[in-house]
Amino acid sequence: MRLALAFAALVVLAPPALSQEEDWVWPVPQISSDISALPAPVQATRQALIDAARSGDIDALQPIIAAQDFPPNVSFGAPDDALAYLKDISEDDEGRQILGLLLELLDQPYAFHPDSGGETYYIWPYLAELDPNALTPEQEVDAYRLLDRAGIEEQKDFGGWFYWRTIISESGEWSAFVAGD
Image 1 (cartoon, helix red, strand yellow):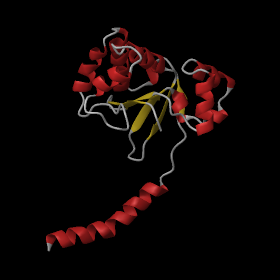
Image 2 (cartoon, rainbow, N blue to C red; image 1 turned 90 degrees about the vertical axis):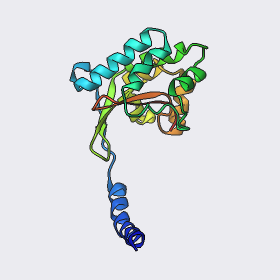
Image 3 (cartoon, rainbow, N blue to C red; image 1 turned 45 degrees about the horizontal axis):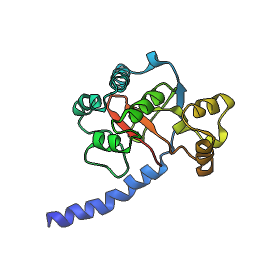
Image 4 (cartoon, rainbow, N blue to C red; image 1 turned 90 degrees about the horizontal axis):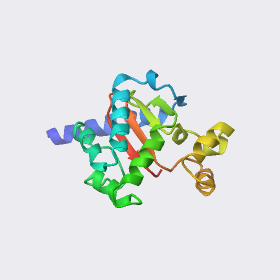
């Protein structure tokens, strides 16, 4: 009987909750290059990622991951070991290409906005939150720092950024270092 009541409550309460999610309008991201404007936990995680990447040792990211409740999303396939995955896809055997990429991303301006739950996320590069077909000349220069002409054209043809990005939550959680849509 309890199971039947729980199921009935789920059926009655789920549609309004789903409707609220569907009604949520994705906010326009704010863009900044002012690192001092980041919340202290975001600044700390960003700096820890930079320090780890500059070490040239991909395993230097492990303490950052170990300090979190969940590892960052590094693939939409959700590999069991984030660092092993990143090392495996790196263009070299040591993961240094991926570390260089992480540094390049974190050197770009960032975008930020709240998600549907109200938590603010900080996204590098900010380009990941923009329409690639509407970039200003200055923004295109930033895109060329990460991609060649063919890569930029692919983003434009797709209609969105699917190249690498990294995300840190306002609480300092390294949420993602991922490519794809």
